[in-house]
Amino acid sequence: MKKLLLLFLLFSASLIAQNKVKVDLSNPNATISTHIYFLQSNSYEPEKAARVIYGYDSMEAQEIAIKLKTIMDAKGLKVDFSKVPTDSIYSDTTITKSGNQYLLFPNKMPEIYLEKIEDNWYYSKETSGKVLEIYDLMYPWYSEKLQEIIPEVGHRKLFNVELWQYLGLLILITISFGLFYILRKIVFLILNKSQHLIINISDEEIKSSLKKLTRPVVLLILMAFIKNRLPSLVLHIDVNNFLLLSINIMVVVFWIYVFMKLVLVIMSIYAKYAESTVSKLDDQLVPVLKNFLMGLVIFLGILKLLTLFGVDPVTVVAGASIGGIAIALASQDTVKNFIGTIMIFIDKPFHIGDWIEAGTVIGTVETVGFRSTTVRAADTTIFQIPNSQLSEMVVNNKGLRSFRRYTTNLGIRYDTPPELIEAFVLGIRRIIELDPATRTEEYNVEFAGFADSSLSILLNVYFVNLDWSNEQSSKHKLHMKILKLASSLGVGFAFPSSTVMIEQFPDKPVFDINYNTDEKRIQKILDDINKPVE
Image (cartoon, rainbow, N blue to C red; front, side):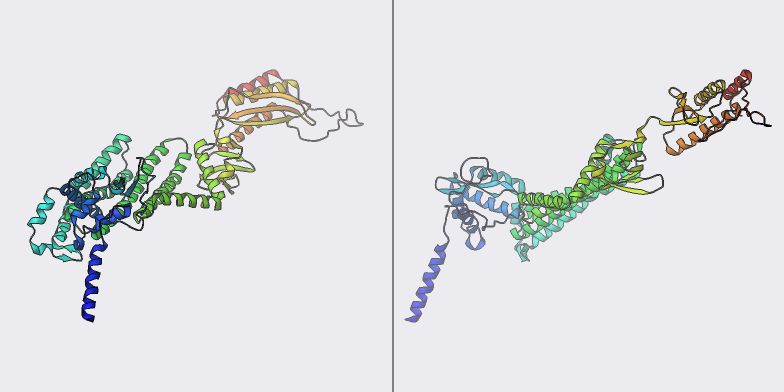
């Protein structure tokens, strides 16, 4: 009796287990479960799986359901049922079409989606219409023929991969190696020709960079070729998922490498252009811009890698934005300095080598970095000015002057005769006009007034040499010529003093200074100025 009861319970349990899974189209989760379950090897019932296809007869619906499952397996698209909605009135707001719809793989294969028709959920008519087209593109005509002619021993499995599939992978890799050596020369030729068409610069460094760029470009082409041919091998979904994930990771890494090499090529071309410009600020921009672009490429590459491991792109971008805001708040000074750097390169208030005055700092600009600008003072002291402050300062760029102005007053003795004063002023004018270091179109040499201890002669000239050291040398030469002129004329320079003049003193001669005001002598001295120095 007990045995009969046990047999009855086992029979009842088996019946319940057989009837446990049934066709259910009440919500997206149930429809996809029905489709996947009834196409598994241990529960293969394609006529039930075909119920998820709407608007086709039984045989056509079975073909579409089977091929849709094959496409999903070939692309390594595994359904995460924990994320598939179980709501019968679910509506995906990311789809612009009206009605209750659900995208199964919105990022990897958006053309596969479900829609609610009456009270049940089916694969959309658009999905069903594209399945055969996608299948024909993924699986060439020889795929099914190949499986039919392979002997039974070839279908034996090792690590969930059939033996003929190992052979297919080996052939695919061998073909890829052959294509690599052929495409490498073709791609380099195309890149080199493109570079000459865009900007014709023949440089070994650029050529070397293009050669380095060729390898990852060819590898990207081969990765696309392998991804396109891989479905022909009809691998298991887990194997496909692993291989495609590996290939996608390699593709992202190769793209990062390509863009990094592309940055180097562009920076090499820009460096050549910067060398041809007068401004040295362009030269300083090359390393700054290169570091920025390199960091941007790596940052975007890491974001892309995260999406490959199932991280939602929107979440990644939002996280990056929030992280960027947090970093910006934590390092406000660094961000302000970086913005200041950008403004300096855009506005170009000075160039490398310019002599500037910025606040209390006076000196020559040596470098402009990401954070600060280096200024070397006349005593060789180094000043590091944060770019955020420098971009807001009033910068007096003496390096942009057309001429260097020099103004001083020459004080001569009060007892100098008017004839010598006039000759002295005229002589200085002629010195300036004949001096190649001074601007002859605009200068001033005038008897300016009466100072406490001297008669003041205004000297206002402009030196054409903009370099500070050349300016000092030009001043020296001008001063020496003026001193020689004063010595020749007998003009004495005054200094702060008090002189007591006694016209008559017992037993002493009368004090008198004799100035030679002979007109011929003065004229000869002035004429000698015009003579070239031997």
